[in-house]
Length: 84
Image 1: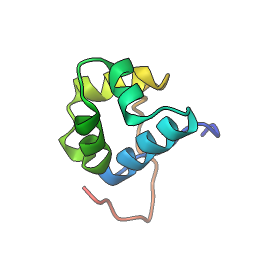
Image 2: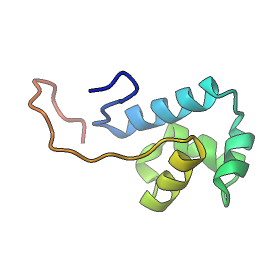
Image 3: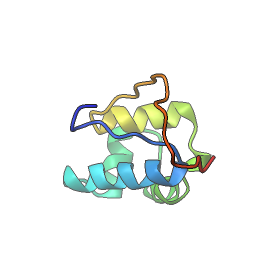
Image 4: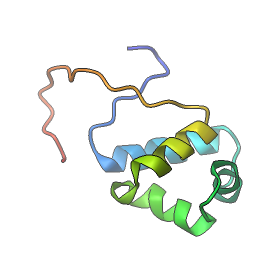
């Protein structure tokens, strides 16, 4: 796995990742909301806290605005329990 890749197995991890990348890029929630289009700062804040309610369409818009992409691959064996 490349250093810039993150494995997400639970919604809370996704929210943490999105918030972290947004902050690393120096973007406010308002900046990202405008860049992603069609969402408000309040909604973006809610999605960072409760990403389980995020639609795939909205996720892809936010990822694109952060210059990220979604990659799906076969899950590697792990001893960690799934939080799903």
